[in-house]
Length: 295
Image 1 (cartoon, rainbow, N blue to C red):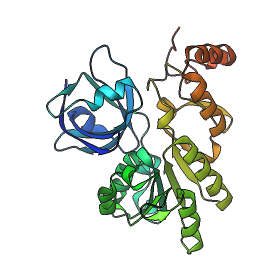
Image 2 (image 1 turned 90 degrees about the vertical axis):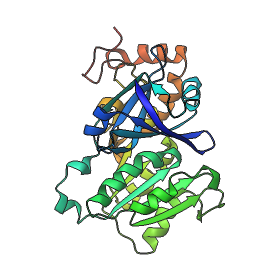
Image 3 (image 1 turned 180 degrees about the horizontal axis):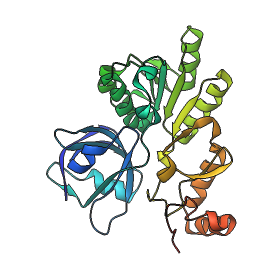
Image 4 (image 1 turned 180 degrees about the vertical axis):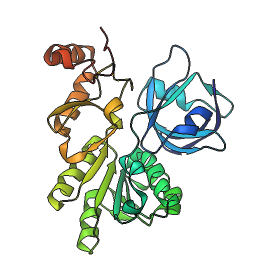
């Protein structure tokens, strides 16, 4: 059992939890995720790691209520416990393994949309701890849905907050802020964008026009988190990949977002899953080469 040490509601239907998980905290890195279950019969929920403390043996997760399982999670309080808290899973962010001196020469821009602010935070924090200040754009639909602003201020070189409705910070989509920064004379070597699929699609459309290499995290399309369900199948550079085992981070300019979003909607129904299985054949399940599928 994995004890919950702290819980709070960051915004409407968005929750923050600090969980005692010493083995996960000991080895996790920015970009990776965990799978949690509230009890032995509960649904497995993949969640990107928001923060960790190796000394205290804790891992922080942030999640949004999107169904029955996350609704059950939101009812948990400090002192309760998860039945499973498995991780770290997935591949760490690429820059974690880069030469530190080379990394210090790069100008990095992070773009976080909505709950995507949670997985962006540990990446920016890791860089800050290494003496590297990155610029960060955090976007939300309204001021009330903005999360982790104070935490991000502490680790970002420059923080730019924007809301779709103009209720706080800059007005408009994150893509408008990217354009504004470039027009103001800012230069970046790489962009990391994490948020809703539609946001990442349009960020990548813009950055491709700007010639700015962009990394995206496809954690929003994960369901099972083990490569077995096939839900997170995505085409990257013309090749089949699975976000949970090959990612979750990929070259955003190579991701077929339209296919991924269409598939995500179809996969939600039993009829849709059967259709995709027939259509995709041997690559539908087990196509990642790391599992036996559901055979």
